[in-house]
Length: 66
Image (tube, rainbow, N blue to C red; front, top):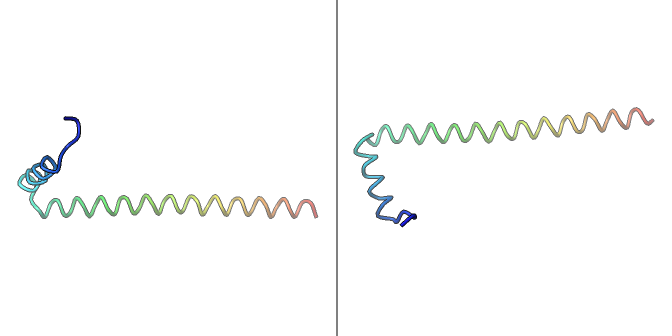
């Protein structure tokens, strides 16, 4: 009773198409995809910055011990 069957998803999709239209749903999907892509790029930029900071710290540590 808690899980939605394939029929439930199909009816839900049909209602969404009837209410919003295919053009609006396509735009919503495109916007959601670009938002997810931007989020992933932001995560990668954060990881790149963390790696640069780590390398800089390692370089300063090596310089100070020499």
